[in-house]
Structures are given as structure tokens and as C-alpha cells.
Image (cartoon, rainbow, N blue to C red; front, side, top):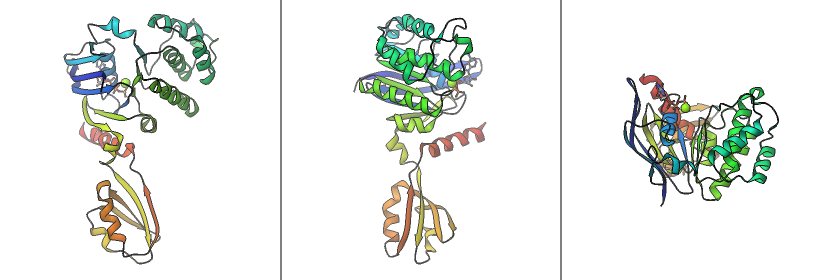
Length: 299
Ligand SMILES: Nc1ncnc2c1ncn2[C@@H]1O[C@H](COP(=O)(O)OP(=O)(O)OP(=O)(O)O)[C@@H](O)[C@H]1O
Ligand SMILES: [Mg+2]
């Protein structure tokens, strides 16, 4: 598989702060990878290194096999980037800034596509940028990013200021560029967005990748919540290896089930008369929270 983004053991310190410690991950062609982690974990620092805006202290980072620091000029023709905090020229209109961003990228602009995006994002391009809200400033950068084709789209919390409807527009646009074969790196705090869009995720915490892989694989690390009601009382469930945090409420038993013990559980309930059985799938949030909470406890 063709690797479009390749980060290998990069390190970065700011004074005494070790922002990144041997961070490695990759994004293949046509793939979208979610990059998640708590505040200050090192997401933006990694992305800024990838864009050649700051230099890593060690390790290597390449885009299309080229060094992100030395070959920045070649690389940037093929990359679209949207930061989480978009700064605009206050005295220009949104429409003017979209055009300016696009000319800076030197990309071939698809005018029809641009107009279509302005409509889809319900954006008014005629106002001066100083008058735009955070969400609207975000839209300027998103419309510019999606108006010209790129091989890689790098988003650093692109939907932080968008309402849920506009967030969905973003998701559709991301799918469209993926369908065309582009690759996407999406740093986000919105876990549902990452779950819906991403093939793989990398979770970063205190400058280190603590978990990475396909969402399917990572779900195995988590537990489903089971709600069970049977005609007979089941007292022995508490002592089963597969059941965690067993509670009882109005004749229903609620517990956490290890994903890889599903079969044991089904065999266990076989002799009983099952009146209700509900299983809530494990969520990325549970996995994330586990790491997030250990961060809070750790510092
Ligand atoms: N220019 C800088 N000077 C000093 N420290 C910095 C600088 N940039 C980042 N840091 C530190 O590096 C660490 C990682 O920051 P970074 O902005 O990459 O986190 P993040 O994951 O993007 O967080 P957030 O979710 O809040 O955007 C933090 O401890 C931050 O304080
Ligand atoms: Mg950040």
C-alpha cells in the first residue's frame, strides 16, 4: 500500500517541555486516519511538523516520500490544510480570502465547485472577515480547502466551531475527496465524527501514541454494555469472568461484557428463559476516556 504520510519516531521539545516523544504513524493513499487526544497532547505540534512549519528535533516525517522540512515547496502544491483557529484579514471579504487562500496554494480552482461549497456551507462570502463568527471563519478555510483538488487534506480540529448541520456538510465533503482517492488526516475532539469517518485512529497522550489501529481492532479493547432480563433469577453471573460492574435494577441485570467473551456469555445464558437482551456497542469514547482519565490522574 502506498504510504502518503509517514511519521517515524519524531521528537520535539519546547524548552523543558517534551511535546512529542517518538511519535510514529502513517496514512495510506485513499485512507482517512483520525488523530485524537486530550488538550496539549501534541496533535497540533505533529501537524505543524508535517506541514514544515516547525522542525522536529529527531525522527523523520515525509509526505509522498519527501522530507517535510527540506522539500516543503514540492509538497505544498499537493496539500490542503485547515487549522482549528483560522486567522483572516479583517478588511477583506470572505469571498476575497477564499480566493487568496487558493491562489497561495497555486491550485487549479474549480469555480463551480467553489460556488457549490459556498451554498452547501450556507456561507455569505460578501461580508468583511472582521464580522465573521468563529464558525464562519472556519468555513472560509474549509471552502478554500475543498475548492481545489489536493492529494492530502490535513485538518486540525476543523469542525470545532461548526453547528451539527455544517459538521455533516464537512463530513460529506471529506467523503467526496476520499472517493476521489485523496488521503485525509483528521485531528478532532469530536469522537462521533472520527468514528463515522475514519478507517483507523491514532490516540496521542502526553506526546506519545498510546493506541493506534483500525477502529474494528480497537473496539476489541473495549467492553459492550449488556442489559439482560430473564424469567429466573441469575445470581451466578456476578462471579463469571466475562462480566464486569454487575448491577441490578427492576429485575434487569446490567453489566460490561468483554468483547472477546461474547461466546462464553451466550453459552452461560442458554439454560435460562431470556425476556430481554440488549447490547450497546463499545464506543471510541470509552477507549478515549480511559486514556484521558489516566492523563488527569498522571499529572
Ligand atoms: N510554541 C510552543 N512553545 C512552547 N510550548 C509549546 C509550543 N507549542 C506547543 N507547546 C506545548 O507542546 C505540547 C503539545 O501542544 P499541542 O498544541 O501540540 O497540543 P494539542 O494536542 O494540539 O492540544 P489541543 O487539543 O489543545 O489543541 C503542550 O504541552 C504545549 O504547551
Ligand atoms: Mg491543537
